Length: 404
Ligand code: GLA
Image (cartoon, rainbow, N blue to C red; front, top):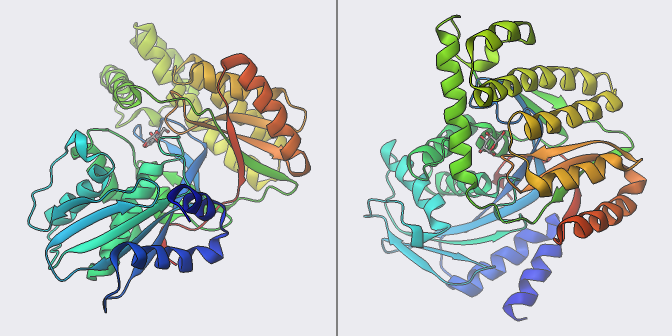
């Protein structure tokens, strides 16, 4: 099989058959040795609701999904670290003696070296080199957190290979620290937490001010969650993300002069008169209003799901998208077009962007027998309006990163 054909073959392969094929691909790439080969599957995540509030102490409601990135690795006898990827063949070489630093030309290896640098900082010693092969079924940069899947999957793989005892929550914190200090993205912890802590059939209600969490059964009866990818290149997403965070911090600093709060999500909609009186910059006011309303929607959404009131859950998703469009201004034409087309479909209960926004993915709750017709119709409307081709898949909640 040529390279393209084997990528296609692996992409379509069911989960239970992946490990064997990946092990074969690994030995075809690196040869045989007596060392054990470790294989980790690391999931993507969706966020059902609670967007852009994980860095404002809010409650978020994400789930790991049953789509994975794979990390296959083995110790070497020398001190080399070699990365290679089935989809983008070409080795990148480093050494266990390196002091890892961000380099633009290192591309995806920055996520890996970032994790190694944090491991080093925590005193974890790599006593020998190792070789790694990656494969992924996740759209890169698509808003379902392929980067967290890579960081956490790789971190878990290295921890297992060298016997470092790192629990899933600590691993998530390390992933976030690597984003902050190595990648210069001031993200919250939601992505890394959901990838590390995901549980099949459950979503996670996570309080980002305390890291307390509860698993909530994601029971959707006759409905499915459909992920809709705008396939729009997310230019400048990282810098706009950091800009939104800075705007929230500005709002917080103003409000702290009139109320003793540690973060924006301690406020309620009943505090809005005070917020309006205190913040005169319309842009900052809108950011703060989104944080307050979104945090309340999360709690209502969880209650709706627990009461199997999916119609109410759908309405909350629509309201969340509107707030991200009008108050937080992170949607853009492509995400709006997809969400509007989905929300206009009679078999869709509600749709919204998921993740950071500025392109990337949206999710929709769709009647299960109508999924094919839904994706065809929404896809057509999207192409007609934007000239781009969206991609779609239905998903279920899956387990967090772990050995297969
Ligand atoms: C990105 C970040 C998360 C979160 C979302 C928006 O995915 O990595 O921490 O802030 O955006 O909710």
